[in-house]
Length: 632
Image (cartoon, rainbow, N blue to C red; front, side):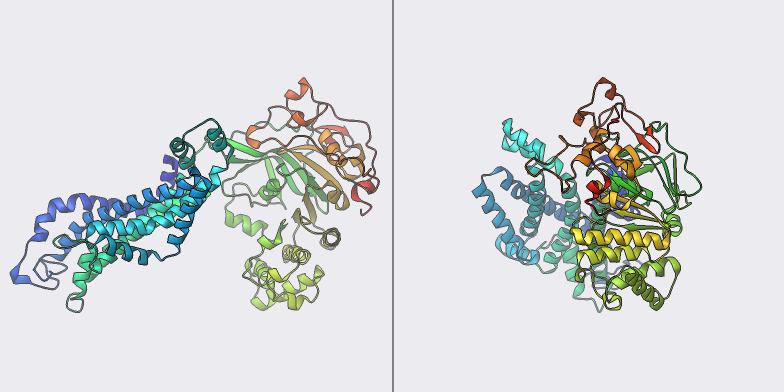
């Protein structure tokens, strides 16, 4: 973990409190034995087993020693032994975890099987088993706790190493003859360090509690030495006479254990989000859309120079969506097409304010249903757009909560945004299920998502968007993984819903044939940019080579089955390594030196624009029916 991530974890209130407690404990561990070590050993025959007094706030033990001072002095021994056990545990776990990656297949399987067998046993049972083997005392307890926790840590290391070991850079290192130990130290462990740090921090708290438990049982620290667990055991014998004698060491164990655990959880949140580095906001370049039309007053969606950036490992920014301009008018149906990774879905998520937390969304102008969402808080956006924008996701099975009934999930939309009662909201959910032609909607509303078929779940997802009266419906590949019959039903349903509500629809798909069935206008995206925009009726006159290649790859009934299907050679560029000029140039048959400069969208025909230095003018040998398979 880098310095920035540690700072972000400490800026978290929970992490700051946990870190503060650990700092206080560390100071006590250093200072307490120096200041009060001798005083904690002094006996007072006149104050044996005494309760709380002004001289002894927590009372004294059976020998008249001050309990408060002994609790403070025991901080060093308790923390030191727990951290030592954690260090041994982490070391053993790392060794066992990386062995399968560097040993031969047979030896690696034996190590993995041994780790899996050890994980199957409860950690406390293993700790007691090893404590008996290594003998009573602090050394035996340290080894027992370390070896009891090593299998679970080794399993974590094995899982993370397995995810990294198949990467190309590891294979290249092996081919280059990098030794096993160097392979581990330079190529494997540095790339799995973050989850290991998180779990090691949490494990320190667990080790502290386990060590206190063994000492409490008499298997850990032995007299005359003492730690919190031993003090807890001694105080428990007199808990009815002086409760503070047992309460003080118990509280110390719990507070220290929680401090380690909460700090680990705070670090885990930072590592998981990966949005913690303080970076300068991504610099925006002038939009390459000289011919972009000014959005009119009837526009439900008006985006100009929309950019979505993610933090890169080198401290810079990566732009999967890079300068998209889009206008959708009321009642209009616009399709966005392109290969996977072209930025279609991310554009839709940015418009709906559902982009990931790590994303940095900017735009010269962004208005959705009359609302400018950028710069507003999440609560304001939810209040303003919660009833105006409906989102139909690609996979409704993962979009629905599997533990909630469908009707209840639909009703939740109305209850949150319109403050309706439970019965009224459920009645509306049933009505919306009926609207999207779900059979027996009263019964279906009380079923769980897994009881619906794929097409039925997609209908229910559309019904969720209709719980209010949306002005814009964004359908993100709503027919993916559906058979052609159900696909046609869902598309027809979207048409009917649009006709009834008057909402604008943005349909996102990688299948240009699906878009041609439903839409009036097509926006073609490639490498995070719009490369062509044209009416569906002019698909046969597409000007950009990429659009023409997409159309050529759609088979129809007249396609010669003896010839291989048309494909687009190569693959889309990585957003982090996009060419400076035309991103499609490496895959284009017409590319030349002019394509080293990025082209802007310019008019090539009425209502048609293309970002290409060499737009094609020859019509394609296809009709709309050929593209849609006769289903338009």
